Length: 180
Image 1 (cartoon, rainbow, N blue to C red):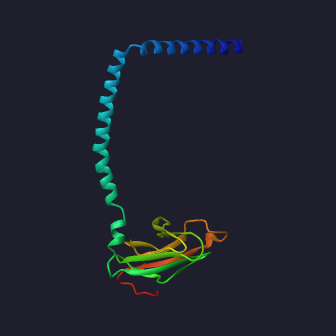
Image 2 (cartoon, one colour; image 1 turned 180 degrees about the horizontal axis):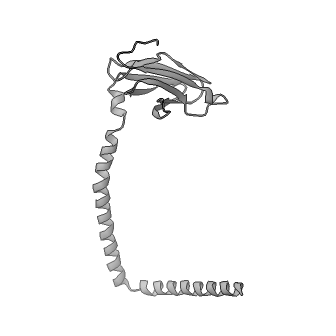
Image 3 (cartoon, rainbow, N blue to C red; image 1 turned 180 degrees about the vertical axis):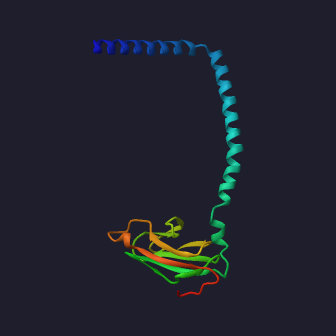
């Protein structure tokens, strides 16, 4: 009984689909109606394009203004320059302290394989990152706005001890002294 019901539903569905195809074929031969549909479609396509452009161009401008590229090229002479070299499986960092509000330029490279250079705040939220590559120096410009101990972790799997590739970077308030 169940198989007969399924067979009947399938047959009716196929017949309905065939009837829709026949209807579409017969209607498509009427070119005058097609031109009307075509013109209407082109009008809607033009309106949609204008609407997307009107919304998209300002949105693109707003989002691109927040890109860090201008900050990287305008790093001032008072910035703290920190050399960071990645090795399997540790970081070698030339400076380990900075002041809140101070511009820090991390010059990041690798001695062996690709590493990801990620700076995490005390709540383990990623605040800045770049790639460490052999034979190439990436500059990461960052201004720390909160004091604390920041973790530098590798973001790219670099071998069996990847999870141990950590370093600390202290950000002090203007009242604090270094070396604490």
